[in-house]
Length: 290
Image (cartoon, rainbow, N blue to C red; front, side, top):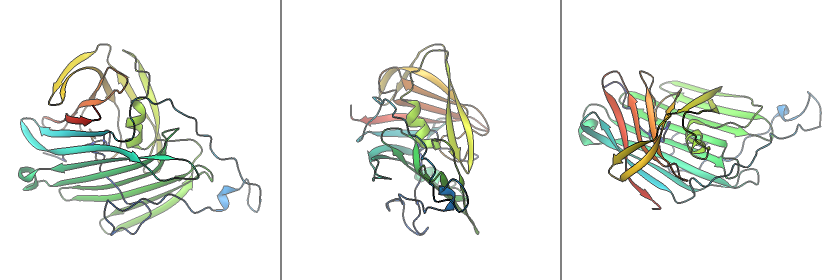
């Protein structure tokens, strides 16, 4: 079964995560760092005392999700129940005097799958409450013998990002410049729920991942589809995103399809990721609020 890909949506497979700028022996439940150290790149020129203007963050209308939302998914490989995944939305810390939302995704394989391919994925995103863009994204992926921790902090005032990755004996930490508002792979999923989806249309979202900026394309099928899962029957948009990166509903070896409800919430109901042999499904089992 190659790697078992699971959600926080598009990490989205459980958007598994966390860590932030804290020591890397801390648990996923430790609070995230919420600031980035300022450097000389915060100024217009070397030796200048004139600060550059912060990157403008534009408010996004959002009636799709709110604090308190919790989605629980059943993860299945063909006819085998492989585990569970959750996505939760809660109030985040203040960052640069702006309120934020915390989005967390977890994916865990069950006892049967643990015996040969144990998965414990965690993703966490701190997003601006108004603009929904990413301030901090953390991943802690444990999939079989593959383990990696990634943490990205973005400072829109000083135009700086800080990236930290731990993989086996390798410990990488770098910083660089950024010139626009960006989404991480988890916040991009939630932002997509706020888009005015139209049958047959295509949307693009600017995503920042592993120090790269790319366009995440989302194609909307020309027809609505009825989907039946444990949480109920839903009329849905069928979305086909093109995703890069590790973990969370990743489909390196094939196609990924996501069904979201045709209503104000655009709630994810089913995610199918085709892998080397067969497909991995994340089916909505329950959700709150109703």
